[in-house]
Image (tube, rainbow, N blue to C red; front, side, top):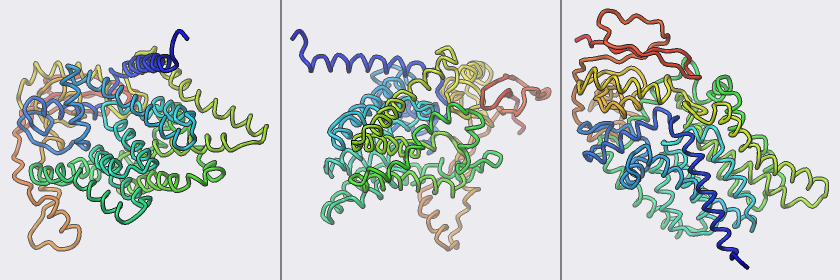
Length: 486
């Protein structure tokens, strides 16, 4: 033979990696605004060791400490933080492919399930719209947790569960649910001990140095209210209205879930845990009444795709009736192809140059915010500026001191006035959480940057700058820079 089988497979693997890099590059100019908040944290960490949006100003609004560290570390090799997003996403995709392949072999001794699930995940419009955020990191670790459970490698399982929690706090819920599957009490204590050792250093640091065990985003998003009546519980309806094709493609595997009750008896424990995780996450977030930011639906997306693909492939392999087998083979072919065709349609519709993520909730595109940021550098220099518009992209490109609830923590004292005489469970928990919270200080801002619901706005004689923006989500809007009233 001219080429050995292993060499051919490796060549194909390299070709696939190259295609994935090209695919990821199509979205590099369409990162959502919150991704740049994470990038600001990574930059501050690299430049000054500060945990915050800009050097010298400690904050605690990064939900995923692990993502911040990984982006910072990758930037040291990639050269820039925006390139780090591409290379880190590529690494996540490669890990997804390898992990899903091994899960598939563990479940079916064949690779088809892994391939179908992999394509569904990377071509999912909602998930690909979270590049730069922690969604794919969370997905990789969640699936790695499943693989370690299937292989009964409990020490590695515990470490991965700890990393999953550091990627998003929802990882703690997944860990607690998977504990039900631990075989005996000895292993249970071992797993719990390793898990606590993994997460304790960060949460102790956050509690003492950052002044709160929970990130500020928990309070900002929870008490920030809904979007004019839309909350997490009905947010998908809002996305269906705004992005109908993209949202339908994101929920493509949902109709397959009833098939779980037909041929998945041997995998029922795993199915029950994954289904419960997705369901409880939806219930908890709905009860919190948070706004429906699209990346909040990542746990539901992972659960739906994993379980939908599992149901389909289980029925396909178990079916011995000729006509039903033909039908199921056709269904498998469709579900392997539809995510790819759907994504190709979305990319072709925008000329294979995306200025906006397929699904997002931003007021301006990446390019528009970058243009505003360039002007801000010249107009305000290093003067602190109060911001009432999305801050991530502007802060990243302008490197100006843009002040809002993500950087100015003085709102915490007003929102949670804790008095020594307060009693009750909530007050006790708040006292414990903010035990080491110090004086946040006050920012004296010279300017005010405001987002307006219409582009036809007159900001008066103290107007320094005005920029018009447009996105599919927000329509025509305006951003103004004025002198701050003192």
